[in-house]
Image (tube, rainbow, N blue to C red; front, side):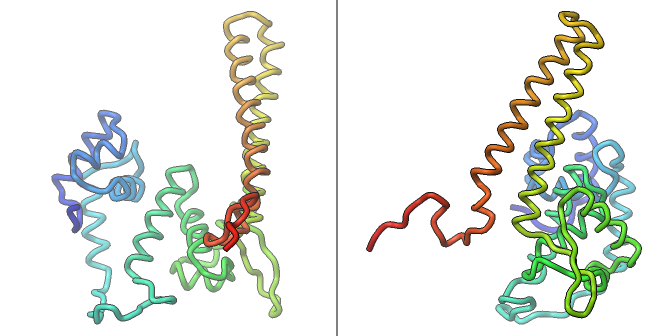
Length: 248
């Protein structure tokens, strides 16, 4: 798998692929690059509708010029907790942030959510987020307000009266439930349209099908969330809920 930064020619190929409505995976295949590289490149530089190869290339050059060279590291020397490779952690963080952005979260919100996910404690204070992400307190405040409204994080105060922001299994479960209820509201609204537009008319039939589809998806999500809820609290080395460990 080729490494290194994308070339200007590769960025032009990405732009052409986007213009042809190619999927990120197909563009990556043609360039022999990881799909995550293409996704991150596009989302970092204007998204699928705003990507420009020349602007993306100049922006990358500016970032590389600003970035201080990393000090040499002895192979095998831990640079992060638990012996993690700090550069690999950083790359993963960018990939996860890009994923959240692709799913509709604003960039700063996606960065804060990723920061919470990759910390071992599963919680950070506002000042810790400012320091970790190198962003302003105002940016943190706006991001956590958005995430809390969406049910993706919860907040509490610690012993020092500082606000801490948490992301855990309970929050993820509640977020799934909220999504399912949102889909159910789509069904309810579509059904209202059926009576307004007249039962049996082409538009009403279309809305009725959307309502039935949305109801099915919502009910399936709720049922699956309840059935799988314990997975969020089970260690990977433990048997899944409902499965009995073999007796030695």
